[in-house]
Length: 117
Image 1 (cartoon, helix red, strand yellow):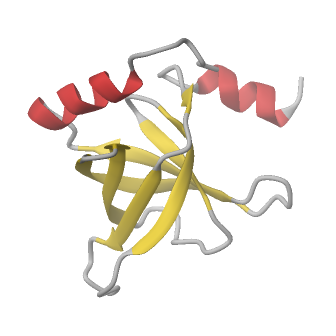
Image 2: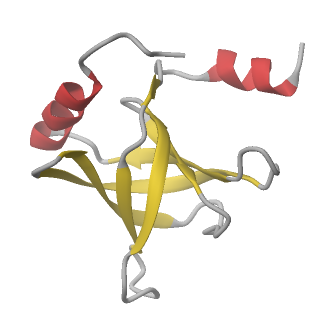
């Protein structure tokens, strides 16, 4: 069994393959401007952001995910994994303090054709 298979089996939430723009700011305020990333997948628990620029594992981020042309979802996430692999560089983000309207908006964003992994 490969490391990728083990990681996939450990996931708590099913992931939907999506390519959504995400604006990211460091919650610590150390970064004044937002950085634009693209997601490769999204779930109720988090997202994977494609990037060759990495935040530190454990760092808390402010995220704005553009879930539709006129709608952005603002939430907080923590970097839980950094992948420097040449084919798939990026960061695994775990959502924190997700409740109420943000959870409902995420539910709507995850609805649609089944493209889960």
